[in-house]
Image: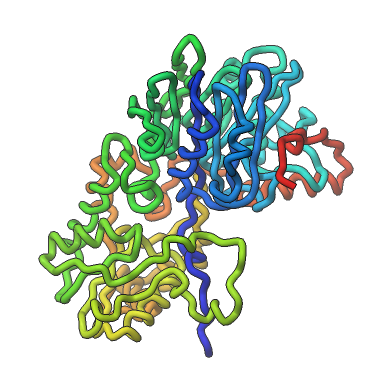
Length: 511
């Protein structure tokens, strides 16, 4: 049977989203947000958007595509103001449509505007959607946005009808469950909030004439902001002419996603005081101690496997080399490859340096194995290029559980680590995966080794995709999944439930 070729990246763990916000009178806040989102592009490549306010109105521009595809000079020049929020999206709730692009925009009953960007994934979306539906805030028409973010925006704007947006947020956020980092704004003020578990990162930075919040510290660096501190779990910030105000809306119980250290965050970012690059190099060193092998050359799968490969080489004494070239311009494309190109599979993104790997026993270091299709194609390609042996080392433990907090992993049945009999031993699982991908040997870092490399206490990390321990209680299966809101709206339409117009569609849209 002929193996199905793959499109590069289709089997990788999907990123979640990136959020950015800036309050800076006298600065070009639209361009600052553009460059901030550019730095966060790795967190979501499906859609991008920016909202800007000048004290009297909120303007929103968003579209499907990369940040550089959505915005041009003329668009940014027309977005004038002193406060802005931005968002780059990967869909974890709701399908990939223009309506689901962010920032979400809503009018309050008082006529003011609210724009919101959200990174993460809620676990009580169904309950919040029911609340929004009962209040007449959702649309059952074909143009409806169907994200948990849209529901948050609707409830915020509704709550701010006869009070301030800050007060509405302090009333709503304690009832929101799951992972959320929010940047939102009205005509004058920038707000940022992080869920009580701090699952996703969010940082505060200082400009000469203002303030910046961003999903990662790398985005602060890019716009010339100095890092001030991480926004605390369970904290709401309000930034305006009076400065920065901090309010606690919940007691913090930190459970930062350990996969941020392994794969998601940029290596030049810092998480909870720990350099992501340093953590990944340390993972590689620990991996070499835990899973040694006799070989000639260590190579990393670019880009995310490279720091761990460097660490593995340093610890093992095996030379590090660049054995694979990555096409930096592939990313996710909306132009699907032809069947002829599909046959080339992974070569669209990665190509071997034959003179480097020919005749060598290779250690190939990658960040994770999800379904295993990419690794299988990669190993076949390396053998065709002349590698004598291919020993795979993985900088994270076996992924056995889906994430419900903002990463779109495959279902448990699709995860290759579950391919062996559930009752089987760790050794049987390793052998089954090794055989499936065609490697000469296979080794994963231990959960303990991975956690130690982060320099964070195990009690402050979420490792659910590796150990199945979910720190935030999950609802029933029927209330989970990417299309929860679509299903609710479909049911409402079928039952004749009347829902109000969605004014998210009044945001600017490129023809």
